[in-house]
Structures are given as C-alpha cells and as structure tokens.
Length: 463
Image (tube, rainbow, N blue to C red; front, side):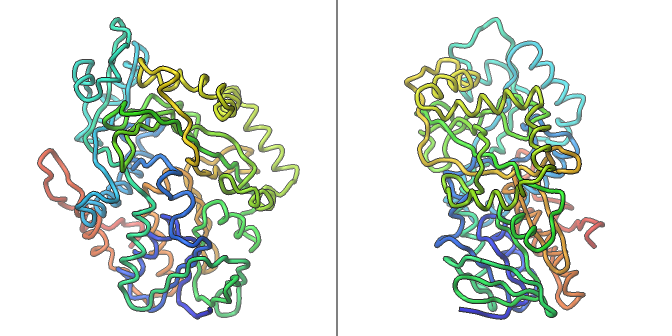
C-alpha cells in the first residue's frame, strides 16, 4: 500500500474526518487520503463512550467568557446545522433541553448577572431564565428532595444537542468517499513523517505515502509527531482521563452545575445518553494519567516522548499542580476511581444535580472515558486553555481538547483555508457552499426561521 496525494490527513477521529469531508466536498483538491491507525474510524476519543456527547455552544458553560462563547457558538452551529441537514432520523444525535443550575443566593445571583449584564441573554436568543416550578416540569428529579428554602434558578434552552461523535465522524468519511480522488486507510499506523523537497513522506506499517501537504489530527499524538519534526518547542501535555458514573432514568436532558472559571475542565453534569435516554450519565471526572490513550499502557512511552523529562517540564507541572484550587481538584478526582470509596466520594457531586440520589443508584461506567490532552506552556509554566494548533511549512498539527469536537467543522474550515494557502492558489474552497450545507440548516428562533446572513457571511480575516 502506498500512494502520492495532494493532501494526507493523519487521524480518523472527529477532527481529521471533518477536515476530510470539508476538503473532499467543497474544494477542487484532486487527491486526498486519510490514514487512521485503528481498524475503525473514531475508535478512540471520538467513540460514543469516551466523551461527554455534548455539543458546546457556550450558553451554559459558565467558565466561558463572552468572547470565547461567541467563538464556540459559530462552531457549534456549523455542526448542529450539519446534523439537522444529514441526520433527520436522529441516528447520530438527539435534541433535548439543557440548563445550567444555580442553587442558593450566590449562584442565582451569578446566573442573573451572566444572563442580564454580561450579555449572554443577548448572544443566545433561545436561552431563558426559569425558576423552581418550570425546572420541576422539565427535570423533576432536579427539584425533588431539594431544600425548598434555597433559591433556584436555571438558564435553559431547547438547543441541547447530544451527539454521537463517532457516528458523526463516520458520516463525514462516508460523504467524503463519494467524491473522486478520496482514499481512506484504516489499520494503518504512521511511524514517521519526513519533510522532502516536494512535500512529505509518511512512513506507515503498510507502506509509504507521499503528500504535498500534511495535516496531523491525531489528538495527543499530534504534539508527539510535531516534536519529532522539530515543532512544538515550549509545549508539553497534561493528559487528563475522563470517567463517568451511570444511573437509571434520572434526567430528561442535560443539567450543568456552575463551573470554576480557573479550571479548564467541565464541572460534573448529568445528561441522558444519546442513544438510550433511560440511562443518565454523570461526569466527567478528570484524572491525570501518564498515557496518551486511556487504558493503553503502550502509550506511556509516547507520553514520555512528549513530556521530554526536562527541567522545564517538571517545573511547569509543579507550578500548575501547586495551585490551591487545582491541586485539591486533582486529588479528589484520583479518589473517584478507587473501588467503593470513589463511588461514595462522587455521590455528593451527583446530588448537586439530583438531591434524592442514593449510593445504590449510581455505578461507575466500565470502559467509558477518553484522554483529553491539556496543553502546557513550559515558558509560562501554565496551562494553555482550549484548543492548540501548530502551523508549519505545508503542515498543520491539531491538538484539540474540549471543545474541539464541538468546533470540528469550524476548525476544518480554518484549516481548509490554510491548506489552500499552502497550494498557492492552485485550488479553491467554496466556503459559501460549505456554509449552506452546515450552518445554513441551523434552526433559529422559536419557529426555526432560516438563517439570514450567516450563510453568505465570510470572515474577513479568512478572505
């Protein structure tokens, strides 16, 4: 197996699959290949059991600033529009109510300020404040057993998209394969990427691939490959493994609690599973692990490659973990995975959402959870919040923690523009058609009016 392509994408998760779809369907690039080391597309972090199944809009994520929410909102609407357009039978997603819950005077005041004064009510027209009685109508278990003397307020919206990102990635690949010049290779591990005078040679266990342009969208492994090629100086990873606990039929939709703005991790929340709404998932937890893939000890060496075992890396970890907020959080999350003890320790987190929950109601989900790579800047000795991207000479490396899946199509759109620049005008990207196929189908307003200007609007920075 070998070949010569204009573009080769490494990684068949939601990030690589969305870029393949965007390039194949909306550009005139003549040949593109996707290379995935697993036997199936989206077998690791994008698999349905390995993430929170959340499409993040920024409306109920209270650790987002308004600026970040505006950025995430468009990305979420692109993917939601794709799902509305291509998943009418709701095989890849479900649409349910979602809310962020405030309990007590202090939390209620924070939500009111966020909605009325910080601009979130204006940014999200469907988002609305609801009080105890209406919360109880939508989510009876959230109110049942709760102290009636405590104030309750929730910011609620019907746009609660719950997504099977694995099936969505597979859908992207299937649609891309409808086009000529598109090849997908699974069970093919990239062992080396070497720059040549004409582009890049990717050495795999199934033979070499030559590419004019390469994009590495392999999660945590993207930084590993970047470092091997001389990129990514001053960056290491803090891999965080997420786990979940399961209960039966507690919630109808998604219920968030207020998040700590200093932490890059989501607060524990509860929601009904995308494919079985009788199962309620609580989580994710956040446990630090020295691996790049959950439960795969053979990736410990890969982690050490990225970490580097140098003074700057150790000092950065020490500085981050010494934080008076982060350290107790990390230690508490380590306990959650301890048999029996972890379940008892986690129960109060569940009771923040469902006060009547008891110990026998929850069980740790076996085989659930993936690894989210948090980026560490060893020069600043701090966490880099959000997604990370390294752009080199005709090569892109994507390292995408949350909300990378939610903004996969926006990221793909940006990368496609960059790829077009790499080709020096040889190929073109029809962004208008891309937007019409995606965000043009996102329902707006109570009656789902058609999108007005966003379909045609092209970011001036990308022109």
